[in-house]
Amino acid sequence: MAYGRVLLNDSRWGHAGDVYQTFISHAATPDDFKWVSEAYRRLAYALRMQGRYDGAAAACRMGQAVAASLGDVEAGLRLKISEAALDRVRGNVDGADAMLV
Image (cartoon, rainbow, N blue to C red; front, side, top):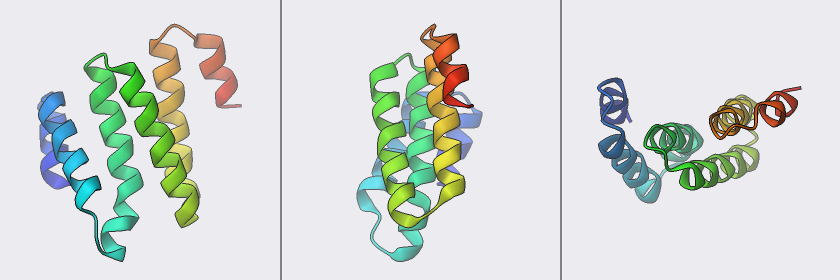
């Protein structure tokens, strides 16, 4: 996760996305699982920055499902904000605003 953050900070979106996808697919312990929704959020950001909006939307949905299954309200809200940011980038400003009300 830390390496993915470094890549995001360096605007290396593709590499960061690969790191987060790898983390998600290899999560095996309870400690790993508590980070999966955050990995999905960061993956969604990396995909959005690459213009891969459909993939970013899917990552937001998957992350929200994981957060809900873990009862992690904070992660769910962060992913909702990410989803709204994606809608805004897509030009649906009113929809993005409504999503956050």
